[in-house]
Length: 106
Image (cartoon, rainbow, N blue to C red):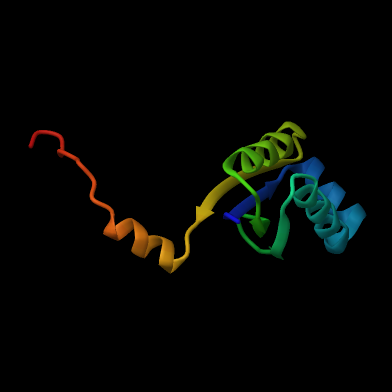
């Protein structure tokens, strides 16, 4: 199953929700969200700095990841960035592929 890194930054409303629900309450909400689209949370961390949470999640497809991102963003309480995570073996497969490409100006 594809793996994604979701980086989330709470708005002021989102932070009020974290204060009310606590970290474990937010983790439970994120776990339910992932499960609702057929995925699972591998890890979730809170952090200092610009990004408030880092979530590593297994989701069944890019469409499921997009649905999660759209729903979270539409709440207005959180801004997210999502990265597709690749295993070393997937990079090995990519490195073995022959790609027809001409650089600009070449």
